[in-house]
Image (cartoon, rainbow, N blue to C red):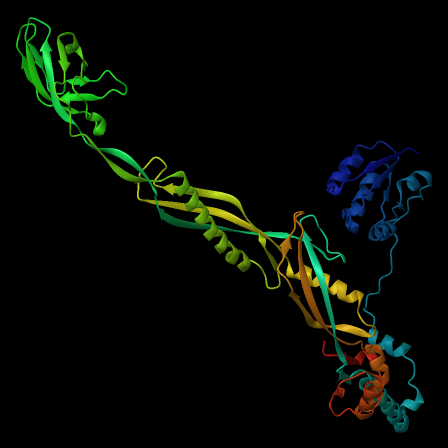
Length: 498
């Protein structure tokens, strides 16, 4: 027979499935239910679909792995398969009426069923002697477990001590990246920014104009008409540099060639260079030069200079060097404060890594009796971390560690024995003195084996005879009334004071 397989979706319901079945024109309809899809879960749903299949003249079967659908389909007489291939390969059973599965009308009496299947109690359980015996054994077993695992002990030992000393030369360079037994250590850098101001008197001097020269100019008319000479008319020398004078008052020169007039003049710029000899001022500026001739019939006088303080290159260099020395001295202190205790500082590695700001007052082209300099710069120096020095010292000490001794925690002392010095290759060397406290090695397992199961007094004597101690062992028991050291090793704690 021809079979129509209908693949259902998780959102299908009875109505949509019936519509899909109506389109099938075959004698057998196979509904394939997807996994984990909770559809057609009710008995009524499958009953309605089976009835609809009968109306369209087809036999209904389903493909599902749902155990509940298997049971419901079995009750309704609907063939059910686990795989689609099995449904197409196997023959379908003939349609049969739904099976009625017997379900009891009344709920079973579970208590009665439990009484029916319970075994009869052993006869010895009714005898008080046996009950007391087993109770006593249970109590004793509980006591044994409690007394075995609850008691604990702390054994405090004072092992024999000693000292280990070492002197070596440490080497540090930026080329060293790791710590090794050759005494090499990596270098680190630290920096600080400092700003300071310093002043110093200037030592140079320069002549500056003080007063302007004055005199009289003799004007001669070169025309037949009258000429007006306004105040501020500029006359000058023909030499270089040009010295310029200006009339201080106006004058009217009479008409006629050769007419003259004298007008007072003053130097335009102050200074002794305005003191000129006779006939030095012979040039005129402006349009009047074509109408007049001029000269000074008397020397000009009154121009003077004065000396003022001014900075020199040596002043600037000396102030810079002095301020830089002050800052470097302060940097040594500030840089040390950035280090941790134990770090080794290299004073000869101190350099100025960057000049952030350098300001002189007054400026280079200005005068002044005092020169001030403000410097803001970054100082940088190298150092070795104290933990690296301790690591190297520990490595060297461990190479020569005596047998049966272990270091005491916190018992290492490292002291620089010389000032670090950097050679021409950039490697810094200094001497180191180290001292470390040692104590005899204690094996906790051995201590436990010696003392466990003994009374504290006996355990103390055994420990004193077996171990190298400088004091009497102390054993603390918990609970305090417990008379023996526990038999379980993990209930014993050994302390050596490290």
